[in-house]
Amino acid sequence: MDPGDGTALLTDQYELTMLQAALRSGAADRRAVFEVFARSLPAGRRYGVVAGTGRLLDAIEAFRFEPAQLEFLAANGIVDEPTLRWLEKYRFTGDVYGYAEGDCFFPESPILVVEGTFGEAVLLETLALSILNHDCAIASAASRMVQAAQDRPLIEMGSRRTHERAAVAAARAAYIAGFATTSNLEAGRRYGVPTAGTSAHSFTLLHGSERHAFEAQLASLGADTTLLVDTYDVERAVRTGVDLAGPSLGGVRLDSGDLGVLARRVREQLDSLGADGTRIVVTGDLDEYGIAALAAAPVDGYGVGTSLVTGSGAPTASLVYKLVARADGPGEDAPVRPVEKRSPGKPSRGGRKTAVRRLDGHGVARAEAVFTGEATPGPRDRVLHVPLVRDGEIVGREPLTASRERHARAVAELPASAVRLSRGEPAVPTEFTGDGTRP
Image 1: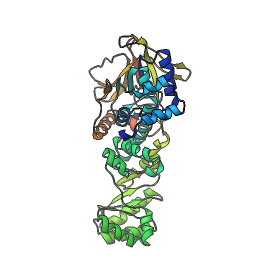
Image 2 (image 1 turned 120 degrees about the vertical axis):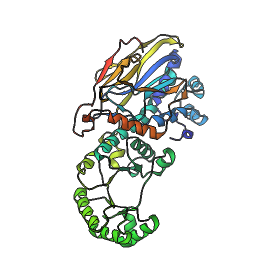
Image 3 (image 1 turned 120 degrees about the horizontal axis):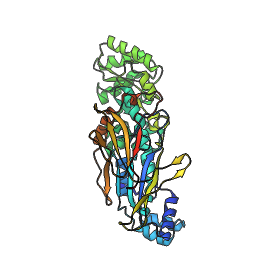
Image 4 (image 1 turned 90 degrees about the vertical axis):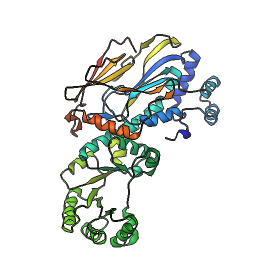
């Protein structure tokens, strides 16, 4: 997200109508604590992945009501004049804590805690959820694909299967989860995600024959390029590619058919032609299950598109943003007490939370311990919350590579069951403790 775009109207109208009513009742200035969590993981998932934090920090920094936005609100009668004056001066001045980007989460993990006045904190609800629900869903699916690929590199190539802005965010989230590259150039420019790409079937069709198309591609990109070999006849295309590039041909790509069978045939053919170092990359509606099915095939890399950018069947992380504590009156010194929702099927737990991941003597996670109040970590506990915003100032920015490295460490400390693709319970249980008196 470009901070220059402004983010204040990327929200639902009821955030502003709640603000207006709270200003009228005098409750808008009461200290409040909101929490982001998922009541459950998508069916069969063993863990979720925190992603989008860096984008959210940029969005909070850009959350300002500029004249054009205020004019829209006034012209459409969305809020009254006192609320418009309040919004004109809006700046988030509170604190935000959260799980560090790239870490794993489980049901009811308090992955984000927002503290401030009710008025300033409630306005961030839709923005926080829209960013985190999308990016966490993509990163969670991407992490499963990375585990299924077993150290073989993955290329994110889903830009044509989603909204143009969502594509950039998806490439970023996939990179955090371990994808090697993306086809999306804006993700490369904005976030530094490594980019890759060669040619499509249209390039071969344009030139009338694979020989002419391959000659043009090799002349432009060099012998290390990857040739798409399934436009007409795979065996003939492979032979033509090696004939033109020699045994140093970088790679061939298969995009259709029985990829496992084709990969074995192509590997045998390449080896027989002396191109034993030529890589085989496969694409074509792959998901984590298709990738896992190719584990025994002689494949050197995968390209994933549609399944990745749609969360592989779970396009949202089902995160919610709930008020868990509030003061009875205005002022920093007003006592804050837990509040909770008791709706059937949609309850929340009151009180400000902190969390640790409890590890055994081998460094393997055995529980997600959530405290109401301050965490009391044990000698093997890893504290999960880090400061992201302090007194309205962004303090939690970090390089994308740091999030990527953190994710690799976080998955490595999970039990072996976490990376299974079969249906099952979350990899570690969530345990609650604390007396609920210190929100």
